[in-house]
Length: 348
Image (tube, rainbow, N blue to C red; front, top):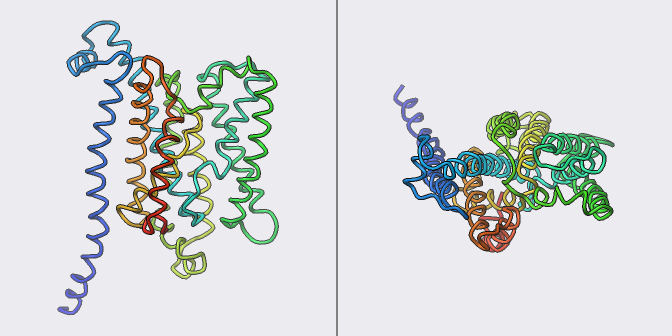
């Protein structure tokens, strides 16, 4: 019995060490997210001091401050938080699944599918506002991602990360070419999708985005369930099978989660680049390569990046604004270059 107790006491510290980085990361990044949310609610062309913010939240204050907060800032902050969390987790899943540190959600054709569906809606159905083509973008992302999986699974054997990546890149390039050609053929008709295509948090209400948030929640839950199995898959599929991991089930779950997360985020905010690529790198560089830590922390850090980029876009050329998708690209590129130079960041 003494030997058993000693063995148990020796096994406990590794478990505590795994929980330690996650708890520390959740506390630190959670506090940073709170700061980002407050900045998103207060900073802009019409700044809201804290006194006006609390008054508007309580239903008091001027009608202008209530309108800015309730109709513009809160929906914008909610969309940025949800889309950021979804893109960060989707990027972590894709990188772990393909064992490719340069992979991002767009590699499975999500962005290309959503953009093509929106282009078809504009040209064939006469849609003109983001609220009209949110669901069309989501449907396009779903269809194309499933098509990529079917193409990557054709032939001998099951789908593997390399074939899925090649299928996603090839199909995405074709669809992007079709979308660009359609846009150039009728610039006036496609003026309405210009803001969405640049990645923007404007023009969507809470009522319009709540149904999509349900799909994002399901995707996040699937990702958390898959995290332990992804640690085994990172060692190779043969080793994962020897550990008892269901590689086929993990593969299917990753495809489903990435489709829900990246498809939903693209539908409500447009194609926001670099978030899904950069955030998992930052988490790995600081907290290690355990997917049970990377996935939940990516869900907290990515909204911080999106919200702060959105705030920066509001003040760079105020009173005009820069879409958040452009800001994340400008900020993310040098950060990613710096991280790629670190050996620890490149490890998966």
